Amino acid sequence: MKKIIFGLFSLLILALACLYAGYNYVINLGKVRLINNATPFEVYRGDNLTRVINRLIGDENSLRVKFYIYLHPEFNNLKTSYYDLKEARNLHQALEIINSGKGITVSIRLIPGRTWQQWDSYLNTLDNSVNNDLQNLTPQQIAQKLGIKAIDGDKNFNSLEGYFSPNTFIINYRASLSSALKLSYQELEKNLHEAWKARNQYSQVKSPYELLILASIIEKEKGNDQEATLISSVFNNRLKIGMRLQADPTVIYGMGDKYKGNITRNDLNTPTPYNTYTINGLPPTPIAMVSKASLMAAAQPANTNYLYFMAVFGQSKHAFASTYAEHVKNVQKFNQEYRKTYGK
Image (tube, rainbow, N blue to C red):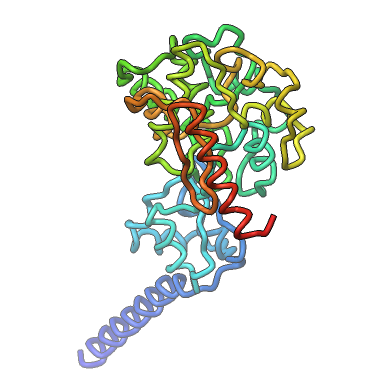
């Protein structure tokens, strides 16, 4: 009898030892180093944890993997994305990162006051962290792909200028570029709608598209957001009395690639569809991408008699005048300060 009891006890000990060894064998799977954690790891749509583990450590022992998954049901919460596993020393740490659902993101910074051409050049420099599904498409093809509709008042709809809102847009790693621009377009629609509804009695624009065009000129002219409504008042006052806007940024935009950093008297007098020294009213399209602050300024010009402004030397602001005589005095004053500083 004693031998039988001893034998059974020995078998029990052996079984427990085997269970313990098996448990450790399974648990230690979490300590296995990754095959490669230097590059972003993708969890595909429809992936399961078994396939993910096999790709991470190359373990083909399906039974071991199944037991590991059984012991860690929390890791079954997989979210399709790319994950940065550089900090993961082993499988368990990698699965914790993946389980967090915090995939790699990319920031797309679209700057106000830049043109569509400048934005397009920037977007084409982005590395393969973004899927540039807009490359080599014409503006018309991009508009169709993004579902962009002509803004009320845009009769020709042949330009993307002004149709997007500047901001920093966060998208998933290797997501399509069109997903960021869709967000930008939707934000512009919202901002423009709000600005159009909020316009005051001093606003002279006749359509949302005219509002966008005027806002783009303000965007290029303003030294800061605080003076934007004053600059808006100058242009709205000029529109009211039929006076040409004479905005230098419209000259520069109309020159295109001919602009080399300075504009001359000849440039001011050379007609282009955008040169507001030679055309009446607003140019045919916006000349830049527009911030919400500039849209609101275009819709809500300050109540002034200003018809002129000039940049104040050495400061990010302007001097305003109601008459040409006052404007000439401002020009003489700040030119004198410039000569004192630079001796020219």
